[in-house]
Image (cartoon, rainbow, N blue to C red; front, side):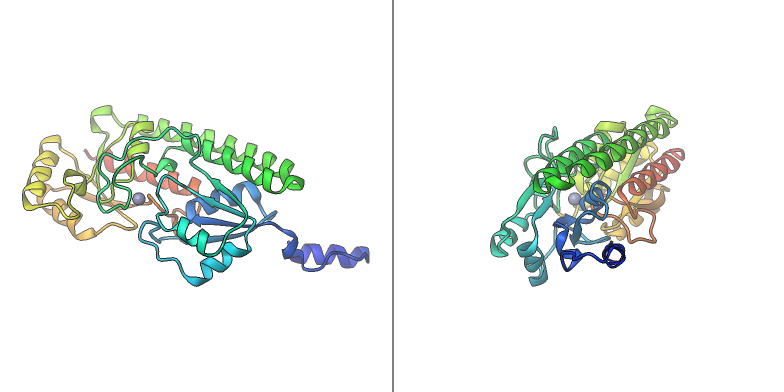
Length: 299
Ligand code: ZN
């Protein structure tokens, strides 16, 4: 963008405002998934910074001084809300952030976090709404409206890219339904190590059983684990999944004792790096759905 602009300015031989990058609104997104949504809507129109990058846990994040500097310079901040980024309010205050705050989950129907052990947000609404593409479309609407308000000259572009992205998300949503629909309903059960798929469960009809979900403690007791293993055997669940942030040892123990098969990583709270299977939100959802279907076919 910068190159193209300076080239055009040079070609036209016109006096142009200096520092092309400075012309673009600076937007900070709190974590990688939101960063991708903003990128899809804004393209190169904004200068985007993401605080919690790929393969990193936003729950346990420790903000750095550089993050405060990013926020102090930003015109727009995009966060998930619902307590997902427990550290953001303090950081924004300390920066200080003086721009427009877009809370992406605004207006989204939430589910209660019955038990999200190991999460700071074990009570109140479950923040992982993006695991349902339908709810993510609402996020995109909110991001489009927020960016358009913050940067009126760019509004038409945000709306246009937002509408094109929304059409892709509608197709993605239908595709996931179709894929999951290929698995007979009684087989749609998996075990995961991180309890972040309530919205996927509600939207697409897959039951996720999390080892830690059986207990309010951070590690299940021997008794909880024995109960879970019995449940897996009785229900003949062979689809076991680790996550990009899960503790593999527990799942491997369960796999050994139940004859289950550990599938590829599911991405719940972050994207993968650019060369991974979940470099964008769409790729992440396709990867997860494909892995789930392959795993559940063995149940
Ligand atoms: Zn989470």
